[in-house]
Image (cartoon, rainbow, N blue to C red; front, side, top):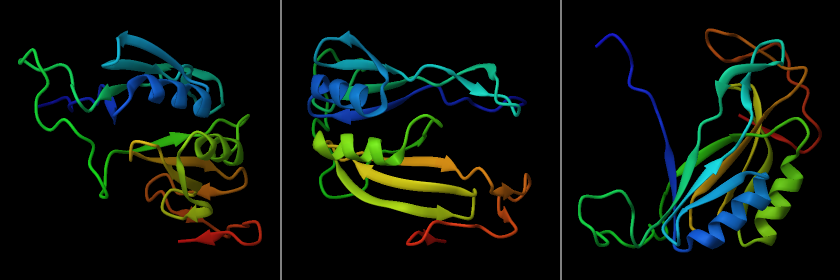
Length: 175
């Protein structure tokens, strides 16, 4: 094999596709297309990955889906197949979202909680990739990781670890 396999798509399972569509559209300001009524919607985050100079590259952002846990499609059987429920009380899908420079953890977390999500943490810095993070669980049990780089933080391109000192606001945690 000379070329790696490419990630094409990730689905967020939900017990209510229409409610999840409204949740993600408001929390992240994403376009969410209704593709199969009450069964599947496609999330189109928009924009393009950025070049090192900050200009948009030719690479568009990945699309994601929202699928009904009661009837995940596609499947060769025409009717719903097991399992038809969400994973209660344990780990579920976890997605990392790079927060744009004109948005904030605070706005996203406020919207997520107001719409039924649960905030897990905020104001944390991870030296592994040199970024700030916060997290919440959506109303369907999926964990959403929010990510931003601090403007004055440098990371090593090979190890992805922070180079030098990190100046965090008071009260932030670091690992």
